Length: 347
Ligand SMILES: [Mn+2]
Image (cartoon, rainbow, N blue to C red; front, side, top):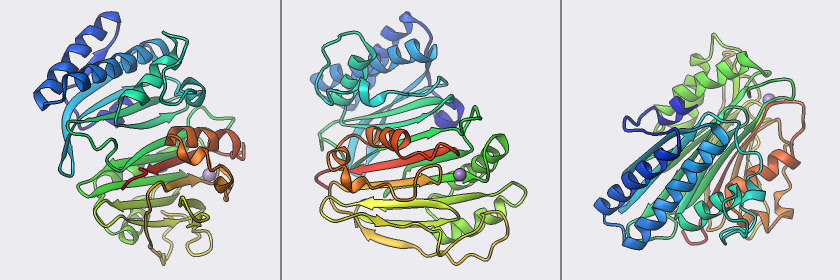
């Protein structure tokens, strides 16, 4: 998964042993100082980098990190990526239990991840059982505390399989984000091959119309088993969310005030992407309100997640929400995957 996640980044820092930690700390400090972060932010980011690297050593035998300056709209930030090929996080919620406050058991993994959440402006998590974990952490030069949203992807394979036949993608674009959940037909390696093909295809076309994308995916997946697809695109300036899907796959938007808005596609666009279906894709357009939670998920989870009954949960980090879904809403008979985006309380 490291190759998949860090494909576009040439300058990777190797996390191999204890000696890597001080080297990484120094690289992060240098880059953060060059970007003009305050001395306090520089030190906080150095702690975050150390904890992420230590976590990789402990749970994945090492990994790779990238530290670079980036922009989100007008704002300048340091982006820190930490990718490993480990088993994936299986107890994120418990390890950050005290939420953004420090844990009492110093030196434990809990302390590590809790301080990552506490000291970062934004944290995006992508973790896949038996495949690996990616943390993407942002620290802004002049804060907006968060620029608009945090995200999480979590996948777990069918009980008889090692790897999931589902895949997912979350990409920052010029104007916001582009998000995908793909469920390759069936499960196992052939399912994943179809899902991978769809993700690779969509990754380089994040700005195209969603209905066009599904139609061209249908051609792209023709020599695979095919897949179900759910796409979402968010535009930061207009706060518009567009979603479209095809096949047996689901999406929900939970607003702070109202009940959930479902964009299940099973009525309108049943079929398999890649099976030369004649699609009539409907694009849902919604304005996002502050504090909303978007969930895209495969049919390994129940079709209605009943998340509105968990008001407290909806205020937590998206990785906590995703972990809840995989633990409590899974059917247990298929690959399960969830992509969760939590929009900030002030947009
Ligand atoms: Mn499925």
